[in-house]
Length: 330
Image (cartoon, rainbow, N blue to C red; front, side):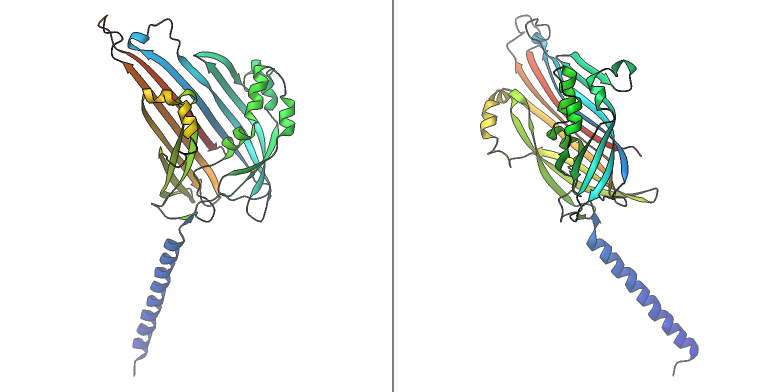
C-alpha cells in the first residue's frame, strides 16, 4: 500500500504527463492547421489606403545612335497615386464584401517621349480647377472576395458622370474609373485562392499574369508566392509573403497569334526581373502592404554601325516597367 506521500507524487506525475500531452497535441493541431491567409470584412469598418500604379516605356539609342537626330527616343507612360477610404457596407454568406471607395487625394503624371503632358496634384491650389480634381470626394462601390479579388464593380456611374468631357484631363479621370483600372487598384493578387489558404511557413502557390508590351508582343509570367515568415508586431501576427516570377508557358497557345505580331522582339536580347512582397495582418485580416515590380529590358546591337569612325556600335535599348503598391495608412 502506497503512503500518502507516494500517492501525492503519483498524482503529480500523472498530472504532469497529462499536461505535457495537451501541449504536444496542441502543437500538432497548430502545425496541421497552418495560417489562414485571407481578408476579413466587418460591416461599417473603414480603412484608409494609398495605391500607386505605374506603366512606363523608355527607348534610347546608344553608341552611334545616341547622337542620331533622326532617332527619337524617350520615356512614355503614366503614374497614378490615389489615397482613398474603404468602408465595408455589407458581407454576404460567402464572405464577399461590398465596399464603398471614397477618393481623398490624387496625383497623376503622364509623359510622352520625355515631355510631361499632364502633372496633377490635388493638394496644389492651382490644380483645383482641373477636371481631375472633381474626383476628390467621389465614391464608387466594388465587391471584394476574401481571396483579395475584385469580383464585381458594383456602381461607378456617378463618379463617371461628373468627369465626363473631351479634354485630356477628363479622359485621364475617366480612365482611372474604367473597370480594369479599378480592379487593378483594389486586387491583392498575392493571396491564395479560397479553400487553399491554410498555409505554413515555406508553403508556395502561384498564378499567371499577362502583360502587353506593344510592338514587343505579350508575355505571361507565373508569379510564385512563398510564405516566408510570421512576425509578431505590436501583438499582431504579420504574414510575410515574397513573390518571384518566371516566364510562363501556360498562355503560350492563346498568345501565339499576338506573339507573331511581336516578332520584332526576336531581334533583341531580353532580360527581366519581376518581384513582389506582401505583409498581411492575420489578426485583422487586412493588407498592411503589397507591392510588385516588373522590369523588362530589350537590347539590340549593330556591331557594324560606328566602326568607320572607331566609335561604339549602335545599340537600341528598350525598357518596360510595371509597378503596383498598396499601403494601409491607419
